[in-house]
Image (cartoon, rainbow, N blue to C red; front, side):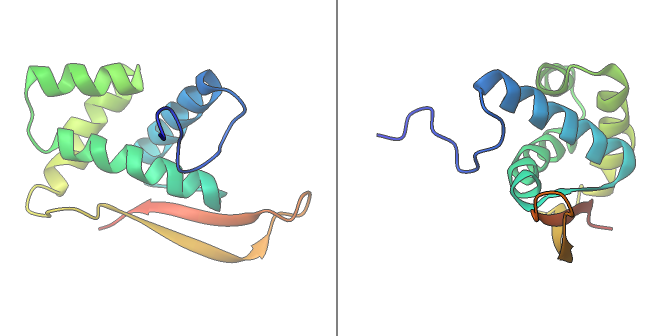
Length: 118
């Protein structure tokens, strides 16, 4: 059984993975586009898509669920005020991952951009 296993191995421990996903999601919401490794982009894409689906309907319960995932009041406010209403008519696919042709200098890791679709 695959209980507790994740599709993308990012971070060495579950606590590190949770904090990494939280921080990357906050950055995507704040800036609209970030550059990181391809594995992290694909992992955070799932996380951000679920948050945007929550933000499409602005209720207190949805805000509390988003805050429990992000733990950042400013990011939740921006998510529900700017990002969520932009995607109300869109049924899914709120983010896109763009692979870069060059790799990171230090360890030759594949780099990508994750950005919100306009």
